[in-house]
Image (tube, rainbow, N blue to C red):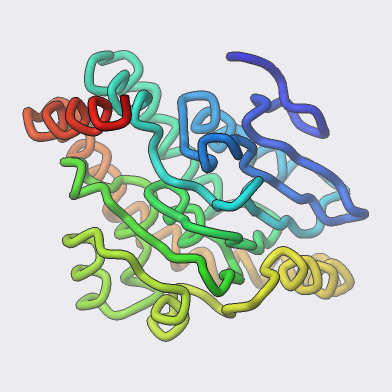
Length: 262
């Protein structure tokens, strides 16, 4: 681990957490890499949700990205490490499971302020959030299949709860971009706005002023349906993703992507 994040929680520096009264602002903090997910950021995303739930003063959280992207998905160098390192695969799959279940079970509502492209795990974080504000130029993208992987963390795991099964299949199988307006029409977002962080903060302030037990129990009531759906397929998804980490297709695609980047 390169370092600990400044702020409230015990996290890598790739995630920043700030307090605004009872609101926790969670920022994916690799702006120079468009918040692409490396091992440290992945670890932080697994750790943050139980810490947020245990933060007794937190009433609601806003999730966003530093710079001009929400998250560009998996860092190519990290993907290359994953194809070579079986132990890293094991840890990553475990953390991926913790991210999904941690968000589904998180005590406080999570409002996503999607300030730019949300790809791969970034797209999954949007799918697992409770309320979603998209920037007008933002888009969602799940390219797992395109790079030879099975998506075991959000995205196609939860899309069938938000939209039609046909829409979920089309975008999961093709990896096509989902524009902000299309995401709104499909039910993958609540609002498309000029300033998603400002709008998400306003929403968070309204939630923070409401009766605490009513808010948290209502979220739990709704997310019981999400958790049941996730648990029905998560074990299969993890096994399938582990197999795809070790496939020839994944190795060839990641090698090509890193060569192109270099």
